Length: 66
Image 1 (cartoon, helix red, strand yellow):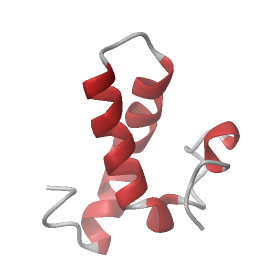
Image 2: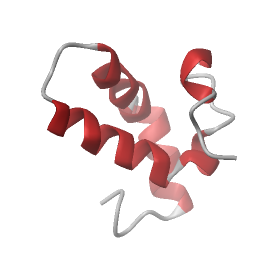
Image 3: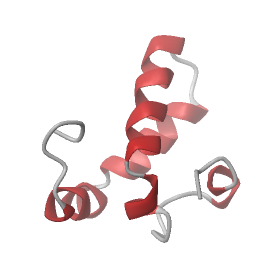
């Protein structure tokens, strides 16, 4: 859904439901590199929409595209 049907309302709902926080958490835990790559892909895909969200840890913002 976040790749192919990402309307502004879907992206906002993902923020409200904590999906973005969970994707950030995936980057911090010990899991397969394939899972981390997918999480990074989704985060980068919608970085501009989520950049100002308080749920994005400050240490990850530096790797977000401008």
